[in-house]
Length: 57
Image (tube, rainbow, N blue to C red; front, side):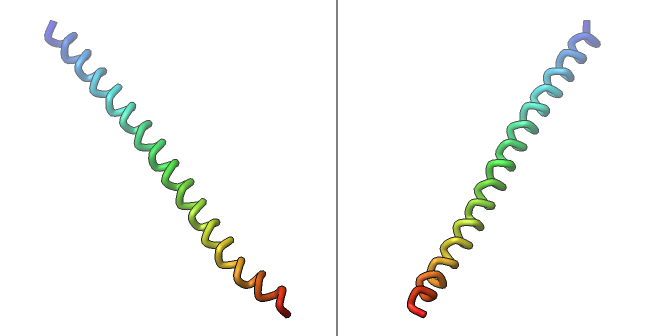
C-alpha cells in the first residue's frame, strides 16, 4: 500500500512539474514575442523622422 501511495504521489508531483514547465515556457515565448514587437516598433519609430526629413530635400 505504501509503495503504491508513494508512486501515486510521485506521479502527481511529476505531472504538476510538467504543467508548470509548459506554463512557464508559454509565458517565456509570449514575452519574447512582445520584446520582438517592441524592437520592431522602435525601429519603425526611428525611421519616421528620417522619412519626413527626406521629403524636404
